[in-house]
Amino acid sequence: MLSQDLKTYLVVAAFLLIIGVYGVVQRRSFIGMLISAELILTGAGLNFMAFNRFMAPLPAVGQVFTLIIMGIAAAETAIGVSFILAVYRQFKTIDPIQLNEIQELVPGKDGGDAEDAVLAPRRRAPGDPGA
Image (cartoon, rainbow, N blue to C red):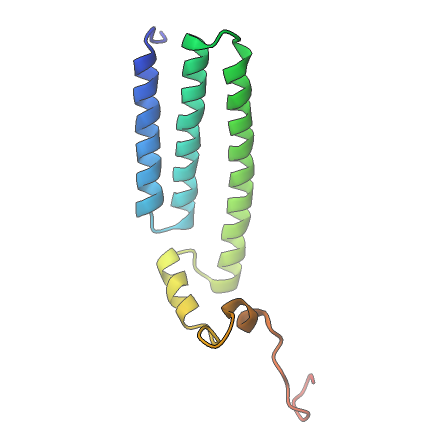
């Protein structure tokens, strides 16, 4: 049976928000961070639905906002998973700490843009094969 008190829903939503923020800060993998971000969005959706049930004059307002949040969460998941796959294919790891160490080893970090150093084509000498 559903609770008849707004405070119950707000406590559960705050609990989801706290767990999500803690997970984003403390997780050692991008997948854990992605799941934690989903918990944050779930807490926000629960807040909208709770306020919709107990305080909204128009019952569809909270439901529309919750559907928008669900759409944003789905898009965030799709983009996040594609980002994780791209990072894994490039660096063979998804550990943020190892990626930070790899970034420090990138040539050209002090003298220029690190992205340009990674993405710039290698200059070949006239005698090199493939020149």
